[in-house]
Image (cartoon, rainbow over all chains, first blue to last red; front, side):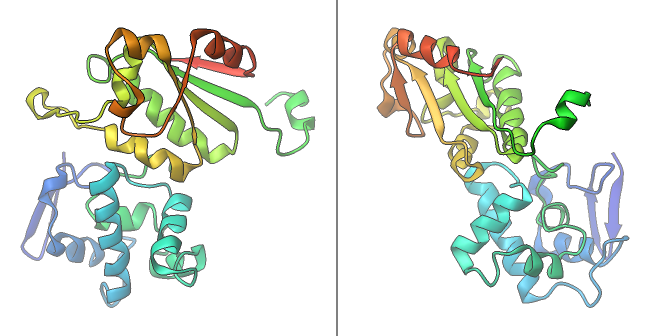
Length: 115
Length: 130
C-alpha cells in the first residue's frame, strides 16, 4: 500500500487515497488530504467543511458505514436543516462529491453504494 | 440491455427479497448480502430482508467481535431505515430454536411463521439467497 506524506503527516492509504487504518485519522490528516492532490481545497478546510467531516465521523462511529451521498444529504438535513441538507450546498463545499471527497478527508472508507 | 427492457416504462418497481440464512462471521455471506442491499437501495425497488436459520444471529444485540479480529457490522442494520429499507422479517421457528425473541435483536422486525414467510416469498419478483 502507498504512503501518503505531507507536512509531517505520514499514513498508509489505498490506491484511491482512502486511509487503510481508520485509527490513523487525526484532524491533521484531514488538513493534509485537503491540501494536496487533484481534489485539494483551495484555501484549506473551513468550519463548514469541518462540520460535515465531523458529522461523517459520528455517523461512522454509530453505524459502521460510510453513507451513500443521498443518505448523507438526508441525514444532514435532519440534523442541520434544509439549507445544509441539499446537494447544492454539499457540492459547493466538496466539488468532487460529498460522499467520496468528504469521506476520504474524514478517514472513512469509500461509501458503500457509491455508484 | 435487452430491447424489452429498453421499452419498459421508466420506474418499474419489482419486489426484491434478500434471504439471509447464515451466521454473521463464519463466512462472508452476511456482510456481502448487507452490502448488496445497501448498494441496491439506490434503485428505489420494493426491498425486503428475511432472516432464517442461523441468519437470525446477524441481528443479535451485543455482538463483540474483537476476539476474532473482525469488524462488528451489526450497527449497520440500524442504518437500513435511512436507505429506505424498512421491511425486515424474521422466522419465528428459527428464533425459537435458538431461544431468542424479537427483544434480542438490534432493530425492529416483523416475526413471521414459516407459512407466512413462504407466502411472502411466493409474492416476490426476485429472491436472492445468501
